[in-house]
Image 1 (cartoon, rainbow, N blue to C red):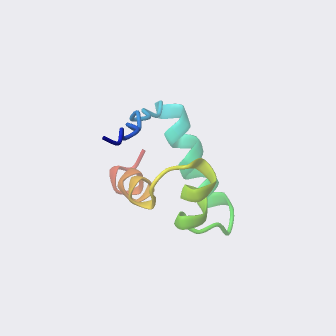
Image 2: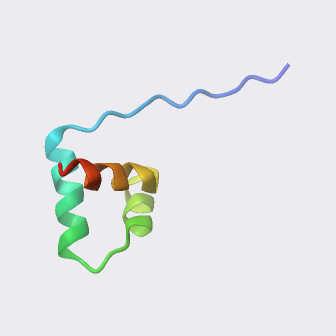
Length: 53
């Protein structure tokens, strides 16, 4: 029987979310590139934008 590794959910603080949004707005970086850089899914960044963090 194989064991599956569980991925622990990572919670971001407000300052981390704010830093992500600043990085997105300041540079000519795409959401996909920013997500890859920080090891998160692009939909997470889209949701942060929608919530106006």
